Image (tube, rainbow, N blue to C red; front, side, top):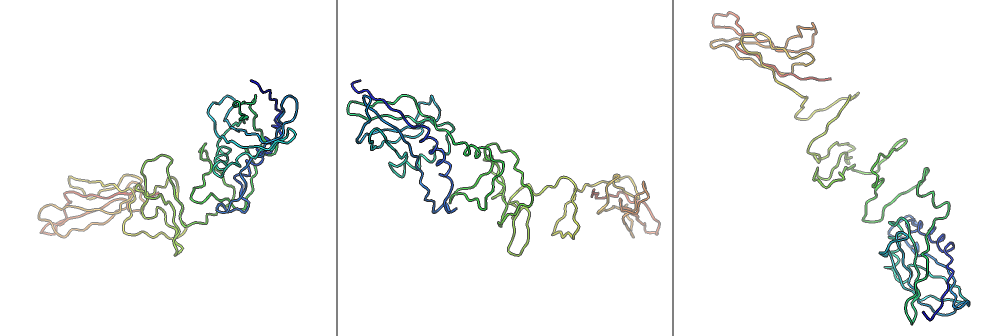
Length: 322
């Protein structure tokens, strides 16, 4: 190699400022992602000497970022013509084009441990400067990786994208105090790709100030409530109310058909012997506890002479309501 190049790159000045700016890459000056004009550039300072003397002139340099000290695949690269005066230079990484700036911002968001490599592009060939420079945060920027008290007035996602909270760990998210959702719908979407529901709208607030659970039947499995439910107000049921009913039949000539202990009769029926008329049936109190609650079905039949006879069978529809 016929050129002896010696460089002292000011990694601390360039790296520290760079990390401070990488955090502002996703901070919007006016809070509106559609008008985001925050520069996505990293200032990098250094000194360049040749044979012990500071270089002056235009020098072509290639800057490459790697995610890790031993990584071989570049995460980002850019070539610039840098002005050097008396050995000092300042390069704005990401300034080559808007595409380069956007790519740099994406790398800064996704990478874990960035290292910068600098290569001089000379007439006799490329000269890679020794030792990659590691990007390190300033002390207070480290707080952003484990914030314990984060206060914001508005938190918006860029236009056309969804905001995701705790999307990596997927652990519980706690909210102290009242959670005020200013929206018409509260939807649930599963992490897997299985087709469940039609939009997943669990809660919907209509223009008539009505809160609907499982709006439009989006959840095919319906709504299931486990545990006690207290309803101090009135409850209106539409066309069907299913309360876990089960039928029971008492055959062989029975007057009564009683539900199992803990269940109540909500309906019933009977069948009289051939030739019987003048039947009647009604719920009966629980004979086991003496309670006045209706827990069974009593039926009687009468033959043509007016004698009361037992029905041939009685059945009851039982339900347990806690």
